[in-house]
Amino acid sequence: MRFTGHMDLHRSLERALRRAGLPLAYSQGFTKRPKINLASALPLGVTAEAELADIWLDEAVAPGEALDRIRSAAPPGIRLDEVTEVPEDAPKLQGAIRSSDFTVTLLEPLPDLDERIAGILAAGPLPRVRRDKPYDLRPLILDLKRLDDDETGHQRLLMTLLTQEAATGRADEVVEELGGSPLAIRVHRVRIHLTSQPANQQTSKP
Image (cartoon, rainbow, N blue to C red; front, top):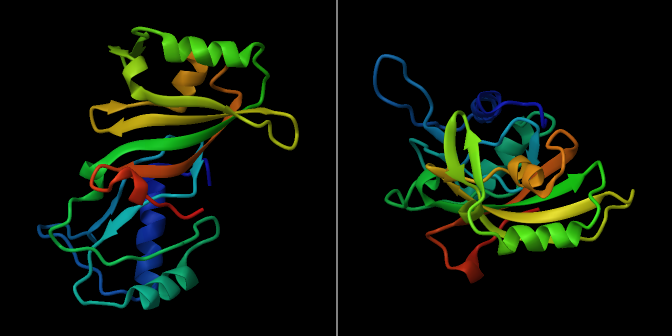
């Protein structure tokens, strides 16, 4: 699944919803499409366990029933954890995301990792270039800490990165700033934080 692109994931979810027989609402215009919005696109190669999606229906369906129907229709690699009804005037997810938590497994060890992390957190501007545009990486890193090594001895990190339309942190770029190879990592998103929720009420399902 980590090599499934954003649009392919969107299409897979759409097909599952169709197979589930849910009364999907459609956009207007010449080419009508189901009204489905994934909260935030995952970079290719990244897996996740706490993704969110807005899905509009033409008729009310009990959340529990919708969850059972989608689960039975979902393809391998996609697991549905929860369905919640939200008010129609609630902010769309794409505009309500503040940040995301990622666990990062380093497949190649970094010596003095704790010191490198401390250096990043104490740093001033960290100028970088993405798609020929200069930017400062440091404000995009909200938190960075070391986790216990995994069962095979690989070093692991937990990153909280800004996730907004015009300012999104990428785990591979943080690893590169630490001196590691962005090609020798496994990245997994474990949580999405929404601005519309107080911090002590933000939840995600593993």
